[in-house]
Image 1 (cartoon, rainbow, N blue to C red):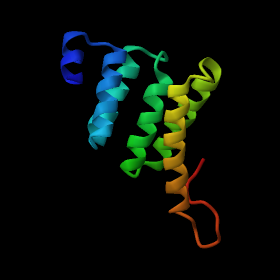
Image 2 (image 1 turned 180 degrees about the vertical axis):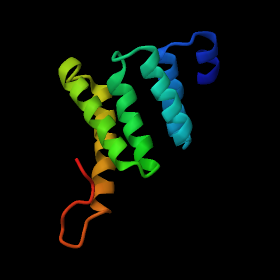
Image 3 (image 1 turned 135 degrees about the vertical axis):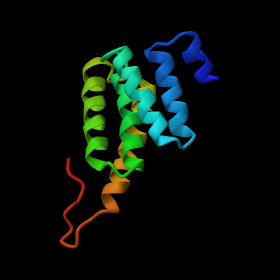
Image 4 (image 1 turned 90 degrees about the horizontal axis):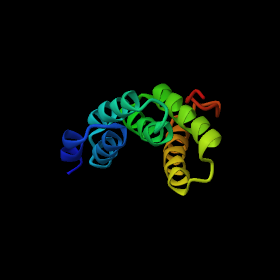
Length: 117
């Protein structure tokens, strides 16, 4: 259904919905493609929505640095533009939990985190 919406009316919001649907379906490569396309179609307007899901998708592919970059961009945008948006608060928490879990699973023997901020 999201694919049909994008074909009928391509735009950042529709493409974001398709990217999120692909992420939720486990298609990380497809999610990244659509979410980056959404950002290109509507630069900056959906940065938090795109960025939190880009962070999670990259993390699932083992791309920790890229995940952190997108999370930080999304977080900064959200704090500046919509700090109390409850949907964004939930997405940030979901992405943050995944980043922390991944970080905890990659601890070095001396206790330092292997995940670069």
